[in-house]
Image (cartoon, rainbow, N blue to C red):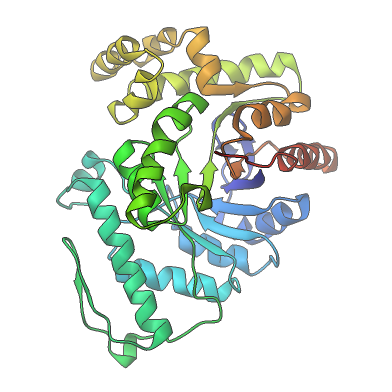
Length: 357
């Protein structure tokens, strides 16, 4: 598997990818260089507290071989043309190293955070990607912009707003997916699929791969040609004592996912529907402290990958090596010894090649 890491860096909690000391925007360029030097294949940025496109523009200035991507940027709050422009600019800035990862976001955020009308996301995402690619085609091939779909109708591109062709126009598009309909869309129109941390190998094999294959068949594609990317839920630490503390926090995160209806299918496949329903009920009552108790050991060890630094790479390979092409993985790096330890883990991860069938 190829290795990716997620900004912000800083001192990371390896289980949750959340910084104890948040990375400042002014530190992004130097942090990206550190990521490249350690030996990562890629650096990705999620859209939470800072604009991911601007952070990646900074990262492109200090790196030469490191792939850069969004994991993920929100699609629907931006028009396809705006996203097409951001991706086009980053592809130029990085000399062809950019991958556009897109996410849909749930109904409540679309309506209440972005102030938009919600629509079923799978069909909307399909329309979005096709519209965006039509814009890229217009710029690269110097052809009229003509796209007509359910959500977008684009037929105007004047010279003032046309950036023209670039050297590396084939920008990979990845779609974040967990439920079958979005998996099928990824198989049909995307170059890669980005899996949610809650996806277990069983869920990937039994639900996601068949859905992606079904979608790929609509466009005469093969699902094996997609990049399968994942940020697994990991509990790791230098030694067993520190790992015990991390495990407590990661168990709470599994509980949060358990309580979220959008992720229910990933628990249903294991027969944990009643546990999920109880967790959702507790969340509605704001009884968050009780939810981790519902995460029994079988569930915890199925959803999370747990082990000390010396073994975590091999454990991830064993669990996902036949399923995933690119894996997001981060541990704290505060000195050269910790950097060497991380580099060793990355080498172990890279030793596994996906053999999907």
